[in-house]
Length: 297
Length: 297
Image 1 (cartoon, rainbow over the protein chains, first blue to last red):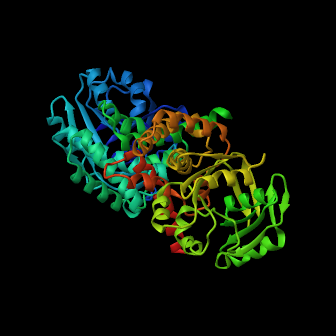
Image 2 (cartoon, chains in turn brown, orange; image 1 turned 30 degrees about the horizontal axis):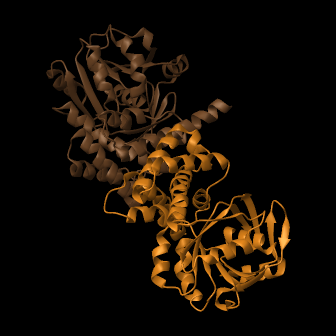
């Protein structure tokens, strides 16, 4: 299958290398000429296996209209720059982002393509422009946002293999909400305190905080709080030595995804959501601090 | 005047050296023989002036019953160890602690002495067992908790001088509440984010957090929120480059005063105080983290 993957970050590189290994013809669309050239020269190497896959890389301006599927792997806050490039495509679009803030934008865009949404349980760290470390295996969930949903079965049968488990979900909201609750609790708490995922359940005070935050986020999303808290606990336990992406972003003084995650929750009502607001403002305060440092240089 | 000062921390050392300079005979009661010997040998040196004052130091077991006043300068959580030593004293007792949690204990103790409460605006850092750095001048406020309040005027006239301004307050609750709100907002926020006091008003996200926390604490204490917020802003601005004691405690991985400050607020009701609870649990989580490190060694 000819698959275009948009975004050369950790998840884009991971998807490209996993899918390149199974008789797919992959094009990875990136923003920087430098990364494009590196990938065209070296392929993508995936650690810890150290296997290298040949992958074609292009700039997004040169999008190949013969792609049979486009997998969009950029961060939520980068999506608005991407939409215009998708307008001439006719193949199914799969959006793989955290949060839910982008769904309304996608709906407003009225794509004529089939639009699918996905969430990923994989852990990945980008080590260079063409090297990605696969830190945790999981599965990809896919649900249909618009268009015929038979496309789901088709994609599933084309892509799924033992290295790449895929779950088909009937309802995109349930699927995204599940991921959003996990991200809304584990990401900000581990980022504020700069701890590994497991601390959320080992440190009794972080556990209390996380549980309160989880309750509030679930009440906003109108999903069952206990069920989702149990899932947070199980993810924190299964990934106890992992560093959440937001923890890494704060540590590396990069922009985080907080607006797409807790920012989205805060926008859902006029009511005051104090735990959400505390955690949101904490991450924004940390970002503001390091942005100031850059400005002072 | 023969004044006994209990506690060889930053405020105890500061009070001892300031009062020693004005015809008072000071005894500083400390816990460790080592500190006692150092002070008896070297006196107390106060920076940045670099003046050294001769001060007698004793262990608390050897309390001198001819002291005409006892100024208790230990942390709130150390008070329970101190009370028994005060039982044989007859002179006025002045308690200088943050928070309000200790007041009920003092009342339960039914001291027959005159009991006064004090708050301090001075900034001080203990640099060694006999060296203290005076980082910010302010005044001491004193109010009567029990006993004849004429003692206030007496103490004021005996102690006050241009280096040591003292304000007499009519109502201890108002006086302590004022200090408590300042400590409840500036201390935890600067400690969680490891920033100087001024960041509370410079960083717009910390400002939002601090304002919400202030509102909640004021509602619990039933004091005017706007009036106290303006005071927080003014203290944060006047001490913008200072490091709060809680920030320093967390940085040095020491026990903080959080239980006496936000812990006290949380105890005031069955209602959920989310901002207070978030800030409280954050500091407890940080303390728990470094206590674990010590246990693991």
